Length: 511
Image (cartoon, rainbow, N blue to C red):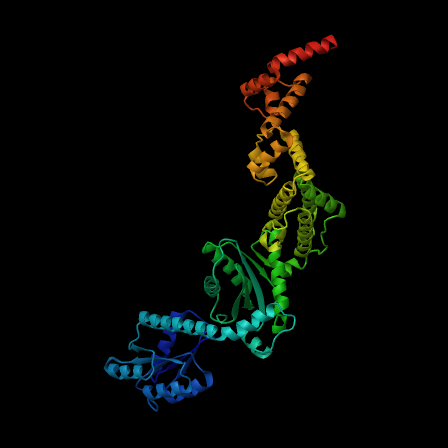
């Protein structure tokens, strides 16, 4: 709460200035004190410790210059503005040398008063920011040390000091989109931008890692409003950010607990659509854990070890279909699930002959994902890398991959399938490598095998006589009928129509 003192012996001038200040500041919380001379003013300075003093130079009992000297003796940090008539201008200049910050000429102009108050506000902000930096080494280090410690340290600040600065507090964990992480200074400025005078110094910012910050914030009645505004502030600055908020605490010994709560709420961004999540809301949700079943685990592990990505992806999709049916998902259950998947993939990779492969050391972390769909995609991509390791071992393991490629071709020959799409979208492997492996194992190219599968399917459809030639072409991956007819004739030696007619005759003759 700001305090301003007006020392002026003329009652009308004093009341008029008080009204001007009120109108310029538009802040009902500011306390404006009044004194008729320097002596009364000095008593108020000692008792009330005002932030800013406006004093006339010519006053009875104690004039402005003596009053100025006494103010600076009591507290050099108190700002003093001299009020002077034009004839006293030289006198006012002397006062500036004695420590006055500014002077105003009578009668006081509203614009000049606003400028004066604005300078005072800016100077106060700068000084308070400096106070933050001055205290940062001690208090921020204390908070940072306690974020991860169950046994709070008492070396840097005691409980009473912590309560005096923060009172009740919450911890806000901020996580920024990868590749667009702001620096410490930018985050600090954004937090400052949504603060108020009362809480300007009552926050501390700690960088946990690149893109992850913890903000310990003074918890007044407007804290949710400020937290939401902070997310908006980052969005305005072009940042994508998620926030997790702890419960309200009032002891420094709870810092570690508050940080865990904030991180738990933050991790819920995977299945919640909001960018700002509160532990208080997450806490109400059911906490039954989701664990992958033993049968699914064994099937997935077997598929990975054999390099059978088609089977592996089928199992993964079944797992996620069951997961999406759950109504009790929470960060704890998802963390356990990802831990299981990490261990399972590590075990499968251990079976390969590529101990130096980077994919062996990947760990699924919930904080890296923004949706369930992203988790599924990451797991399928990881499965592709493990299967590639298994397939590259040679011998029988490569055969499993070839069988998976053939099975996929049989089931999807009606689509626009190429070795490139198969490698990149299905098996997550290098197209050239996959093409070479298939030809090495089968003696024919994948495109030749696919064409053979398509023609075999076309022959069966033509024999059934239920579809037109165009429909048969589409059902076997040929949207261009003329191309279908040309390819079919090259492979079978006759057009699709002639093939159908001959098969009908054979059926009629009982051949």
